[in-house]
Length: 244
Image 1: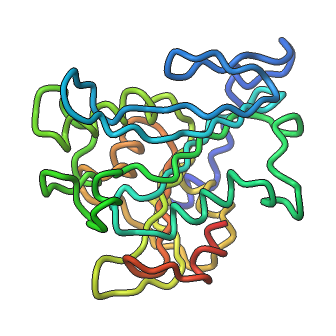
Image 2: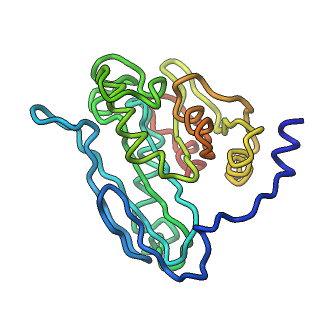
């Protein structure tokens, strides 16, 4: 019944997406991004004075017309390669065909692309952060806790909380392989809509584990889904293609 209710829910478009006021700038990480432009921004996972801050690149594609802010992330688990490969291709020059990149002038809304989130885990081919904790069980995090919790807190407050929708790309854990699938709380209206728009037949309905990005986003009113495909430390072509 909850899923049926979510499908019947036809709330109107948010006023901030209105096109009556013309093109709008997108403010992100203290940067002002003009309509119809693409910009790459470096984001530090940790705010530190001494030691490595773990800078990661974020590509922001800001459309010429107002619309939703969609954040797409890969490698919350550092040994899951499907997300980084798919999102690197998404940012590349041939996404829409030969020499045809995403054209922000033809877009409505904003796309934030984060190919690799867990940089220390990615470097070590490890699921976990440098302190051995699971980043995708640590949201929304705390500013004065362990390293993983601090990273989760920065990600949540600086990147995720300003999103309308979140797509989190994953693979199976070590020793397993997942067929391409979407995991979403289908009783959540926004998540239901994204899940059904993804174009995959297999959709698993669940709320997600406590501390996961998806569940935390849903609890905050953000539509969020998880894509799963392939296995860890593998560049499964089919799973990458489906994600793209």
